[in-house]
Amino acid sequence: MPLHDRLDIVGGILNGNSEGSTGQRTLGIAILSGILSSLSDSSKTFKTSPSPSGATTPLPHDDPPPRVPSRFIACVTRPASAKRVGAELSPFSSSLTVLQNENLKGVHEADVIILACKPKNIKDGLLREEGMAEALQGKLLVSILAGMTAEQLEDNIYSAVPSPIERCRVVRVMPNTASLIRESMTVIGTCTPPLPSHQAALVTWIFTRIGRVVHLPPYMMDASTALCGSGPAFFALILEAMADGAVAMGLPRAEAQLMAAQTMKGTAEMVQNGQHPALLREQVCTPGGCTAGGLQVLEDGKVRASVATGVRMATDAASRLGRGEQGVNAPR
Image (tube, rainbow, N blue to C red; front, top):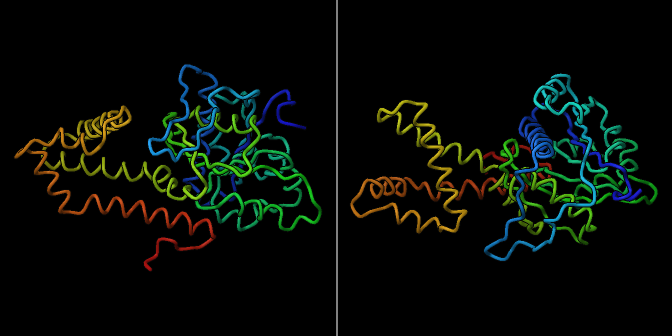
């Protein structure tokens, strides 16, 4: 039955074996929490962000879709995971069902499935479970897996299916953990052929509930994973280092952390309001001043090059994870 003919839409978060999948499991909870929070508070809504480079595919999906999700299913494998999901999303228990080791049932009942697991779980057969291809017929599968392309997922689902069936549509998306406070930066990969208008509008609607959204071609998704998906960890390290320096010079830890966080937040908002980072840096850096001295130490320590290289390495690791490789961060 077409999506727009249903009385309601059920969204599902599909996990694999949760052991070793803390990051993806946390992200799945963050997405659900953000969406459920936004449904109870419609005052905070983001729109798609234009790209200054022009690389973003312009998509007129700021209008709400014909139908929005009204019920949600979280699929997990372990009792501890079920308990955690139930506890963290307890304010929304009336709209949420948690299923343990019942992925197939969850997919059967859902209209939209968000795939939140490790790429290794796909290689281990998560989507090849008997009846899964049939359960996915005509539905929308949203993948937040690092490195794994839509074509790889489709091949995994349908390569062993003996008879032709209606395929699901797969769209690749990369949000980040700031989904939990509805401040995610989410990249949605464009599809070929394009998604039907109601599905495209629904995907955009889901992720504008939890932050800002841009649409980029599939070949940019691994770099987007490194920048947006891994980015919170990179920024947290820099913030922590700045607070450590301040503590070494006598500031109390709590105040140093607050000051560093607010300084980072304010700087980011100035950039979002149109300030170029280089010009902003120059405005703060007076000749012979303390900022100039500090920046010189950072440049001598190759901080700029190290951060840029970290993003490049994370991009490469995301791509290799998608190919099912192990030890992607081992020296080569």
